[in-house]
Image 1 (cartoon, helix red, strand yellow):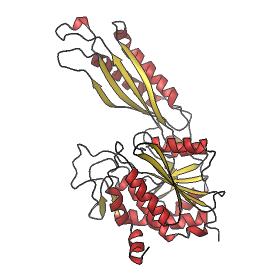
Image 2 (cartoon, helix red, strand yellow; image 1 turned 90 degrees about the vertical axis):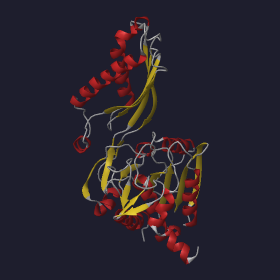
Image 3 (cartoon, one colour; image 1 turned 60 degrees about the vertical axis):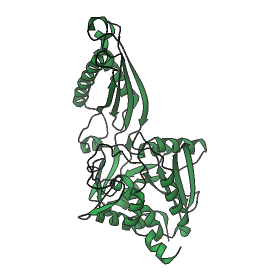
Image 4 (cartoon, one colour; image 1 turned 45 degrees about the vertical axis):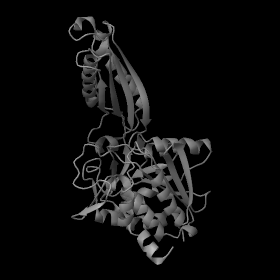
Amino acid sequence: MSAAQVSKAADPIAALAELVAFPTVSNRPVTDLAAWLAERAESAGMRVERFETSPGKCNVLASAGPQDSDGLLLSGHMDVVPVDGQDWSSDPFVLSEREGRLHGRGSCDMKAFLAAVTCALTELPLRRLDSRLMLAWTHDEEVGCHGSRALVDRLQEQGRDLPSLALIGEPTDFRIFRAHPGHTTMRIRCVGRPCHSARPELGVSAIEVAADVLAGLRRLQAQLALEKPALDPMVLGALAHPYPLINCGRIQGGTAVNILAEHCELLVGVRQLPGQEGEALVRRIAEAAAEAAEPWERQGARVEVQPMHEAPALLTPAGTDLERLLRPHASDPQPGAAPFATDGGNLARMGTRCLVFGAGSIDVAHRPDEYVPVEHLLRMTRMLPEIIRARCVTA
């Protein structure tokens, strides 16, 4: 690599611009971005593996240092949320700097971390590491942490392990989070009896059934907000909503304005707290839906609740060595809990103790004109080599 190439490789803003230009919305392939990240890791001297899970979807795992040692895992996701219908001031897939902010889809969530890591690699003695450094770049985190679940399943099938500590570089404004809720997705199908809308007494509208099911979910949400779960006091104290949250994110039904709808489908998510089982909450949602739909079922309607997938919650013990290393760089030395799910819930299935910490704010993620402050990106790039050396280099 020439001096000019080395200089460009170490520039996190240039790296972020390249990363944002990959339109890796979750319903699109990530293979081009995965190839870019793999090439950067290989150029830095890391061993790279790619795990394809379906056409266009793969995870990247890179490692350096003794393979039989402990060390540190850095993890981030390659996918981003859609921009459809959002009012952007500039092209969301072209990085734009305005007033010290770097705007672009994924600039904050979480390509800033990918850029910081790839640039930090150029500052590290990767061939002289005493402990293992690993990178895990995953797909489809934004739609249920599918990539990390597939990666963990594959590694467990192969009898492999991960380092005991992991840094998940989600945007936290440099706060340390050692816990977060999970997210369980389910489909609720309401089936009615279609008929001409001029003779509604002959049928049952699935849309009206769905409306009562939604009302039942609102009643359940109010009940959950009043319950006092016996969970980690730090988690309950750190979360703005110390109870499971239910959201109906999509509803679709009916075929024509003059027909009572035969089908109506709700896509519902529930954020289970650490220590709670997603399956138990799905059962409560199913019970609430069945109770709300009972009058309609006597008229021939039915309601079906189908669990789809679960992103596990995270709860890492306090006082890990990684927490100690992050504390001097943190905006608040006291660890807290993130309100959002991450790949950490799946990685913890490997026995890896994960902390969530990174540049940017979740408050601007997923929104039009998403951004990461320039100083946040540069600060993350500067601190990573120090943290990695402290964990992976003993001399």
